[in-house]
Length: 197
Image (tube, rainbow, N blue to C red; front, side, top):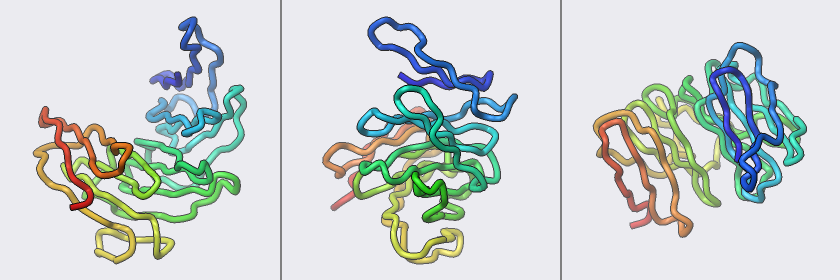
């Protein structure tokens, strides 16, 4: 289990003993940890912080990479793709970034993914799903142009847009069959959206 705290520490826990295995202080103090995620094979994990950086660790707790110069403000969500070749990060700056994990460089950038901050994100084999403080859930297929500015409605990445919530989206998840999205919101509702009609 991986957790992040307001005091700039990432904790790595042993599930069986409920004891701390490792502590990590790789983000710039005093910035708090705002997001954590594990790879699908559980061999790596990542943390995002208010310093706008994403740090990658291996299972032994060693830092193996730091992703910089991407977000202008704090990171709100991080996720690994199924192949573990890329890491996705979302930020309060409205960006969704797709990073090449080994090169520590941005592969694709979705600008203005929402009307304001991207508040949460999930990934699957086919899709990236994001929620924003604009109460909208977006489904993305990362392809086409290297930089897509959604505010100008450039074609290439946005697959579907779901409306229905009345307040900021707080969480999104994709079902294993990739047919449905489950979202939660500050409007105190949970909604299920069908991706493919």
